[in-house]
Length: 277
Length: 261
Image 1: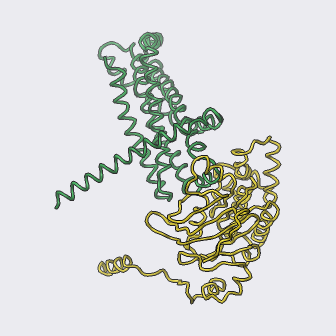
Image 2: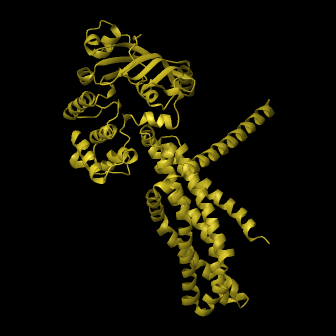
Image 3: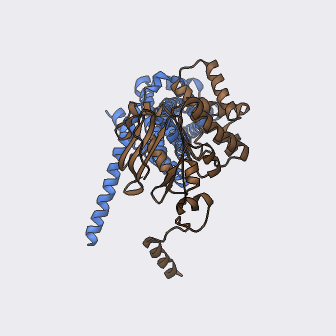
């Protein structure tokens, strides 16, 4: 298990012995991780390993079944209503599918958090939105409707919306998915620059080993319901752990099973199918 | 054993329905509590009135015209038997302002704007737009649902008024222009027979109640639907069915309350 730091002064997000799941089903157990100011933390793992569930726990969308999620020194299980709203105002989230508002154009999507939370003059708002759009290379796309932009552009718009309020914590769910190599490199640098320039903490959920290892300060590898390994990109890169090696090198054989495990329900279904034929 | 199973199944069905009613009532209460945005940002509501009204205006105006035509014809055939054709204006106006205006408008509203609202909210849920708002510290009930709810509630009586006015014009076209009833008699009978408070205001109250019911059902179905294409499709169907039945049931209750001696 990862060891927890004892200096909480610059701590933004801490998960201590957390179990997460939906209903009676547990997906993750005994998860502990720290995210500090100015740090870029990468959360990696196979598809369906529970990375997005971890992100939902950090935003307070789901409650921990066990353990404690602490955000800006506040226990998320005890935060609700205005307290939770205040915590959420300090964070930005990039959703896996972008989650852009389809009835608004690109400009209005990025301006949305400002209109809701900041009292700015129209000229200030215009300048700030265009500046943020420029950072993701979409200044001249401000007038376009969401339906008129590509998936990669939509992801960049969502990124601009996530960071426009200059939050203290930004959670990125698959920020590199569907991006061309140029956009991918620029997005990775943008995430790193934001953490360096604003001192915000960044949590990046990704499968992209090259880009995440290039920008991350710390990497957590999630698998089989637990954190299998963690450390700096350098230490993980040189790790002899077969799980880490298989994941980083994309090998088909190893401790990570490729095939979905057979269950009694599947066996019963198969018997039923065969009996019908 | 069989009786036990049947009783269990009936009990489960009743429990699910009662629980559903409770969830619906809690949703309504939540919506009312978050309606302060109507006063703090009235522009959001006016946008929805414009949007929802535009969705339904054409179909309601055209339907009103044809209902007026039919009322004119049917009314004439019946009144002619008793030599009271001059009362056609009164019959058309009372039928429209008391009953057909609010009821048919609400039914059309459920099919047109109601399904749009359900699909819009359902797709916002499926596309994680509502979740995105929530993590942006923006309450989706307050920001998205409340303006749409009040937009629908305000738009409904306006649409019902349009329906009734166009319907009366339709009755006039058939009765006066096509059949040849005296135009003075048509309008004067209507003027003397229609009571502003008893007839028109009761019609307005009905349309407001229908507006609350249909818009609430449409938003609830969108809010509660499964975030999948199939879930959204089922929710839009439920909006039409539940909305229409609610309108007809409420109409019976309101009519009994308003027009009984």
